[in-house]
Structure formats: structure tokens, C-alpha cells
Image 1 (cartoon, each protein chain N blue to C red):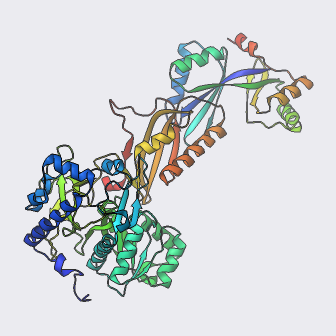
Image 2: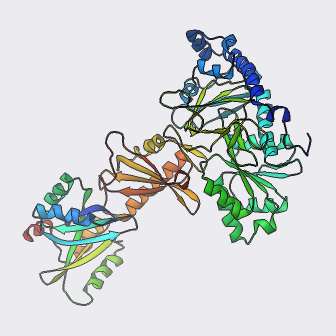
Image 3: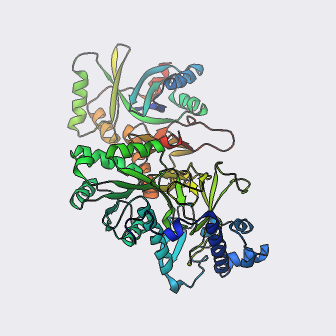
Length: 438
Length: 142
């Protein structure tokens, strides 16, 4: 560890494109060999007549089958394990809101490599072992908690597992512990700033904050710049997903010109979500990732459903790992609100349990005072009362039931039957008016 | 002792009230009284009319969310203090009133109210010999 080096892992970070290609070829062959032990992949390889020896370049990944989230659900819980469960030391799981949950297993090496990726990112944005890192992200199954915890510790920083919420306590920690860096979802940082203002705390004068890692929810460049201006702190975009490990997969360097995806760990493809053919650099398509180091659950050509584009493969920072644009949306109907993944079907499922409601509903996502909100408008099936109080208590019951399901409190509005737009064919259920998509 | 009142769920936007009234006009329904209780998001339009059951069918057929509820309609002298005296009786009997509105008809003040304690209300009205509008009287207003 050379404190003066801009790189934590210069041997990997500064590889030339040619060297990256050679390394990826070797590691892809290893991954195919590992996957051949998984019945799910073994069958596909056999049907397609593919062997590890057929892989002679990273581009040969295109000969391999795709993996989808549905495959993860279908093989729940341990069907995609490539090692015996006794070799696994950690499990993360999604909420399983639209069917079976998904499970991701980790060996000890997987956790090590995950921590290495996060540590590399934090070093890249200028943090060093004498920094104090406050992780204001949810812990538990959400990988943003333990992922950043282990990565920041690996890098050698004093790491504060503050977890999400309780802004007054967060501010006390920031001041008392001399916190220099925070990881949080961007909407939380704007909330934190409001509370600081109420408390008369000036982040420039009263804190040592200098770096933010932000991610896990869509946000625009304008939002990032506003956060930076509010606090006088640099904010770096982070990309992660539990299927790959968690945070650490991609991160911005100090140039802030897109996210470096670590090609010693992943093969990155951008494909047309309809044809599944690769799209040219610069064109938006679906991000497809293949793990190169994971032992417990290697995934081949995993369709992330996130839409982005390739910005370049060189960078003034000296890293030649592929640079991707911030995520531009989804190729399915999943919404990401304040870091929580929500499918419209979850909302629908709850609404349908209320006999007072008709089947037509509309979800609107808005940004109000830097907070992302969800409004659910739903049609009343019948006028069942002449009493305002009963309508109000129905609204409250719906709100509570939705909160239990999606873990966020939406604004529920009852509307008369026939008042919501019904589009031809498939009904439009979600209108996203958040700033990030404007 | 009670009459049928229509309650219509309305969105709080321009034009929704007239949509309902237009349907009633088309069906030649005689309105007696209307009132709107409004909140920020929606309103409840309450209607007393001749032939409330037919009016309800008309609105349902037009796809409008409507409910029928039984409300009391008392006939009061159109003089100061009458409303106070009547409400006082209910108050003393421990009857809570969900909502109330009044209108004038044939020189009399009509006081409409709904309570969840229907039985006690009936008893109080009977014991005090309060003049009330019965359902069959509505039809005569046509």
C-alpha cells in the first residue's frame, strides 16, 4: 500500500486494453469451468456444445447463454451454487417481492474480492487509511451496508456503521468522529443537509467532510452537482448490484466522467434488450455482466435490466477499464425509489385486496424538494359510504398495507371510477416525473 | 322516519359536478337539495331529490360512484332558535351527528342529518313528536 500512489491495485488498474483482454480470456475460461459444475449451466453448455477451450477472447462470451433474474428465482435458493454450501460463508437475499426471492452466495474468497473492489474504489476517489468513513446506508440484507463496511475496513479507514436514518445522530457522529467521507443514497444527503441547516450546522465550517459515495437510486448530474454545492463535498457515483456481489462493481474516478467498471472482475456487454445483439459504443442498451472471479455463484451474461452506454475505454486517470454512463432507466418495469426496488405488481397486489377499489390505478414518481415520492391514485369501485371519515380511514389502510409491502410510505389518492387514463392495450401504470429522467 | 340521500364521490376538479347534474337533468330528476363536503383531494356530493332510487340507477348506469344512505329530515318552523332546540334534544340524548345541512321548503326549514345511532334518534324524534319528512313525501316534491 503506497499512500502516494493514485492506485490501490496498480497491477490491475493500469492494465493496457491488450492486457485486460488477455486476463479476461483466462478468467472467462475459469468461470466456464466453474459453471460447468452447476447443473443449470452444464445443461445449457451441453445443448449449445460449448467447452471452456472454445473461449479464446473476451468476445467469445457471446457464445454463452444469458442468465436472467427469473433463472435466479427458478433455482431458489441454492440451485446456482458452484461450490458445496459448506464452502459458503455469506448469503444475501432480495426481498422476493415478485415471486421467489433471489439468493446470492459468497465464499470467503468472494467476500475478500468484493472488499478489494470497494477498497479500490474508495482509494480511487482520494480516500486514504487516515480518513473516517461513515456508512449511512441500510445494513442487513442490503449489500450497501456490509459491502462498504468491509471495503472501507480493507482499505484501512476508521469505519462507522452508522446505518440509515436518524439524522441528528448522523450529524453528531460526523462532528464528534471527524467523519471525512459518507456513503448514502443521494436523496438522503439532501435530507441530511436540511437537518444540518435546521440545527445551524455548516458542513464547510463545522465538519471535515470531503468525499461522498452515492448510488443505489437513480439521480441526475444536476442532483449530484447540487449535493456537491450544498456541502462543498465531492460526490462520486457508485454502481453495484447484489447479483454481482453488491457495491464496488463500477465507480467514478476523480475525473467524474462516467463509471469505471472493473474488467478484471467482470466482462461488460451492452446489448439491445429486444434483439440481445451488441450495440455500438455510445448507444444506449442493456448492461449485461459476466462475473470473472466469483466462486460460490458465478453468473454468465447476467441481464441487469439497467440501461446505459459505453463512454470510453481510456481515461486521463490512467485506468483503461471501460467507462459507462450513469444508469438511464430500466428495460423492465422495476422502479427504484430511495434505494428500494419496487415493481408495479407489488402495488397492484395490495390494491386488489381492497374490495372498495376498482382495478385501475396510476403510480406517479415525483421529486419534491429533492425528495423522491410516490403517489398512488386508485379508482373507487363503488361509493360505499356517505362519510368522509370512512374514505379517510380507507386511504389510511391502503397506505399502511402498501408501506408494509414496499417499505416506503406512498401518497394514496382515491379517485372516481373512470377518471384515470386508460391507454390502448397495456395500461400505463407508472409515470416517472423525477428530475433524473428529464 | 328516514329518507334516501344520494352520496356521490367527486374528484376535486372542474367539470365533475356538472357531469353528475347533467345525468340527473337528462333523466328529469327533480332536485330538492344538494351540498358538497370537500377535502383537498375529493368531494362528497350529497343529494336529496324526488325519486332517489331511480336517480341512483341513472347515476350508476352512467358509471358514477354513488351510494344511498338513510338520513333524517326534520321539519322546523322558520324561526330563530328552532335548529338549536332540536339539536339540543339529540345532544342531551347522547346522539352524535355525522353531518347536518338545512334547506327551506314550503316555508319550512328542513334539517337533514345522519347519525350512526339510528335507533336512539328514532326514539327521540317519536318521544318529542318532532315533525319529520317521510320517504313517500319525497315523491310529492316531483
